[in-house]
Image (tube, rainbow, N blue to C red):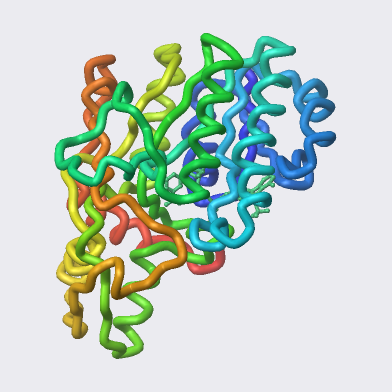
Length: 292
Ligand SMILES: NC(=O)c1ccc[n+]([C@@H]2O[C@H](COP(=O)([O-])OP(=O)(O)OC[C@H]3O[C@@H](n4cnc5c(N)ncnc54)[C@H](OP(=O)(O)O)[C@@H]3O)[C@@H](O)[C@H]2O)c1
């Protein structure tokens, strides 16, 4: 089986590629091969590589910036994915596409885990653009797979964002700065190594349709920061604040905990608790060679 991976150098892509090698020959692709913002680059590259499975880890991920430049977000996450999905369908390749918990948020009273069948309702332009993308992926072919995940962190950092939440917290704590972190957004930050492993299991089982893939349990970003410090034996001044106090450009869901019941019902290994995943991440980053 030939598996092409776009966004292979991103945070998730770098954890996914070595694991996908268990299923077949992996062809890592970058923006140089396919630029989703330039649709004319998509069809020829897909046809040239002719993969059996095309995994799209690439996205416009700048959540706050998307409020000011929605056209750039929609060009990649909406229109680019539509063209990609059509190109994959043309060669009968299965498209595996990643989406986000930010497709939710409009139901402000929600306080129980969200299932794949729950109606989406994004509250940001990024979320709206990603919702369109997952719809394109699923509409283009019955064999396609869309995976919603949340709050990714992995040892490779997030390409477009430079680092990840845990790294930012540890860096600021190391600088002795007092920290204020939002405590009114509840979700499940997820370790890219675990999301990658579950993705490989889903592909191996021939899963199609929409799946939620996140670690289990839930926390606010304040709680996640506090646990990161506890496990790292750090004790910076940490204060919980509201989203309104933080004042980000983009609105985020107050509650976007994703249910993984559908994933586990399929027989995929149940994702571990977010605290255990965080511990594994901290071990992996401590052992990561400094040159890679
Ligand atoms: N990060 C999160 O917290 C989070 C949460 C929920 C869902 N997700 C979703 O999970 C997936 C993986 O996220 P990630 O954190 O691994 O992202 P990432 O580290 O930012 O990597 C994204 C990759 O996409 C590439 N890319 C960006 N724009 C592109 C374009 N126009 N054409 C081709 N490639 C492009 C980037 O390449 P360059 O290096 O050249 O820019 C990078 O390799 C995405 O679909 C994202 O929406 C992420």
